Image (tube, rainbow, N blue to C red; front, side, top):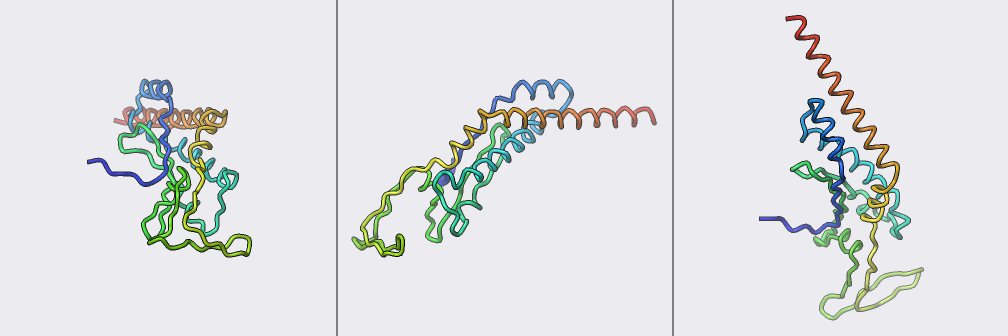
Length: 176
């Protein structure tokens, strides 16, 4: 059974087949490599989302939504997910509500009361506009040169690990 997600997320399934095949030919484990590469890319993408938070029209206030922005590599190791999982005490996932836009209505025909610019307002419903604060920064990052540079840096790091591992194997085989 698939779990329903109440968060706003963006899955990065980057085209890293060429570096993966090259590293695989050098003798690295494919799944481990993919997880490491995607984790590094995901960390940078998450940081871009956090940097673009204010420019998308959001304010930090309590910081719950900002702090909930996270990344995780899915179990299969084929994609990394950037998500905003903020949840209110009443189990409302407002990261999703802010991202997709929604309407907040008062219960039992009552009124919503809140303060704007020092004046109290009373309304029956409020329409939240759609604010694409996760997907847009991630897409911009994936099209940037910073993404390509980060991928190259991660691949070089993996190559260094493979070379060191092979070097250790060669020195241990000479001793026996």
